[in-house]
Structures are given as C-alpha cells and as structure tokens.
Image (tube, rainbow, N blue to C red; front, side, top):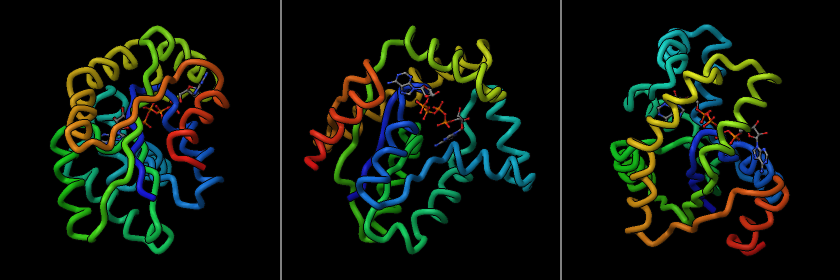
Length: 187
Ligand code: B4P
C-alpha cells in the first residue's frame, strides 16, 4: 500500500505514520526526518537544508525529490510506503506523479488530517518545550503555517481530483485519530 499523509505542521502526520508502520510493515518516509538526519550528520545537504528549515521555508524541490527518490527506491519500500511531508507544493505533486510513473507505481490513499490552527500551535508549543526543535519557535511556526496555507493546502485539491483523498478528523487523542485512519484503510 502506498499512502500520502497530508496536513498542517503539527497535525499529527508523523505521529500517525509511526503507528501505521507497526500495522502495515511498510516504511515511514518523512522528508523532514531525512533532512534532520542530514543536519545531524553535518552533510553539505544538511547544512543547506538547516538554513531554510530554521526559517520555516521549504527546501528546494529538486533537492527534496532527490532524497525522496533515494529512499523510496530502497528494498524495504518495494511493497509500499507512508509518505509524510511530501509532496508539500504542487510542483512536488507533479514530480511525485512522474517518479511513480517511472517506477511503475501508484498511490492508493491520500489522507488529509484536519486540525484547527489553534490546536496545531498548542501542540507545537508543547513539542518545543520537550524537543527544542529550532523550527518550533513561535515566529517560525507562524511562517510554517503560512507556507502550508499558500503552498501545501492546494496539494489536497490535486489529489481530490484524482479521487484518492479522505479527510480525517485530527482532533481527539492519538488513538482516536489512528482508529479513524484504520477504518479508512480497512484493517
Ligand atoms: P516536518 O518534519 O514535516 O514537520 P512537521 O510538519 O512539524 O511534522 P508533523 O506535522 O509530522 O508533526 P506531528 O504532527 O507528528 O517538516 C519540517 C521542515 O522540513 C519544513 O518546515 C521544511 O522546511 C522541511 N521540509 C520537510 N519536507 C519538505 C518538503 N517536502 N519540501 C520542502 N521542505 C520540506 O507532531 C506534532 C506534535 O503534535 C507532536 O509533538 C505530537 O506528539 C503532537 N500530537 C500529534 N497528534 C496529537 C494528538 N492527537 N493530540 C495531541 N498531540 C498530538
């Protein structure tokens, strides 16, 4: 199964993807996590990504596609994957279409997790206290939410036209949200 998780920063994409991995036995591919790993390893890619991420902006499309392609062509992804954080704009959506065509693959589901802006701000503020991520400060979060509204929200419409989107209510406990997702995926 090939799934794309969509939703605002802090909507629970990463949280829900980790739970799905246990059930589906396919890898969780988070472009945010891949960038954070490159930053931790101090690679040239990581250093370039850090500057952009610390402002809450999007890393260049070609770079992001490169790390994504490298990851989803690994052996553990042959039976499927859960994409979290990609695509994040319409250009990336088109790039993903082309890449999947090239790999003879297609997407089964795009799950759009819907959470009120106030709730995501509160969740990220809580995470900032625990993890201290440099892009979780109030000012940067405000920019990330704007970037989401302007660039990422249209991605939902892109997949609606392909009839693969299901909206998931992201309110409530992590388990509640997971149950809603599992009901859609029917397992
Ligand atoms: P990401 O790593 O994707 O950051 P995120 O949107 O904050 O993650 P996520 O939304 O998964 O967090 P989650 O809800 O799980 O991206 C970071 C940066 O990387 C971007 O700003 C950009 O610069 C760059 N980037 C990444 N992908 C890119 C791309 N494709 N193109 C260009 N640039 C890209 O968790 C949020 C918090 O909420 C957690 O603390 C969690 O515990 C909590 N939570 C989750 N569900 C909850 C619930 N039901 N109730 C209460 N709390 C909950």
